[in-house]
Length: 72
Length: 254
Image (cartoon, rainbow over all chains, first blue to last red; front, side, top):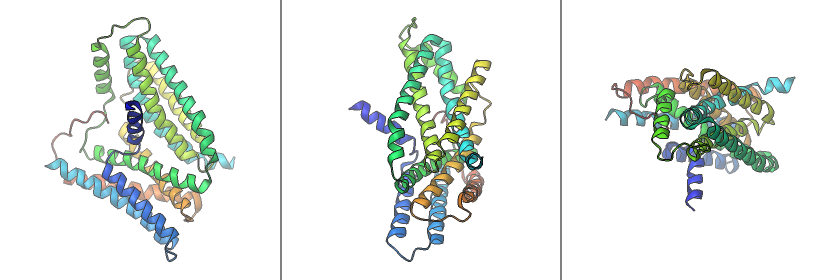
């Protein structure tokens, strides 16, 4: 059992460094997916802007937070 | 001929990403081989490569059977997470918030740990074998993720695999010639570039998976890379201003 947990942890660490950033990105992708499939008004340009702009904003917020934390 | 031109970005991304992983694995295998003996270190390496081959053989056909739209969504999500993880770390390292990875320090640390190990080195040394095996499997899985991530969706597994194999081959040859860790490889710059590339591929595939038709088709990847690079470069500058000025935290290995 321990080996399985260890293996899952190792594999997840390939994709997740900061848990809050990973969760935020997954939430963003889910929101964009819903918007693309549910909201008929969602234009491709809006989806692209949300996808690219949202990812970049989440990344920037995360690194700025890390930088501020390191100053304390 | 056209497919090879189209496969250029995939090959470059796989080459750069795999070279980082190969350098990390090689540092550990070198330490195991020099301290505990080459026979056991190479046996562990061979066992690790066999395990990787088994993983590829098991998951390769399964991936081929997944419908393209689901593959785009899943691979896009995983690739985006993978790329953002590298990009985040590269930004923080470039800004001096966390320390750069130091292959020489890691080699010394690994050598110390292997020397201090209680088990005496023998003809078949379990410590060396296990150390080399773990390094090859852990870093190798990352190479497999990179190759599948950049190559699976666009039917570009062959150029991606060639890029990865070329990187691993070059690192092995360099390590065999130098007989020491490849400390001069600009790892953070490579990680930065690969992070940008992987995140761009992730956004591109996920977008295609939800039905977005990117302007200029595959060339949109270059635009995505440019946007991510510009945003992250700005982040490095701001983080330098916001962050502390004292020496970076001792995060040698992550």
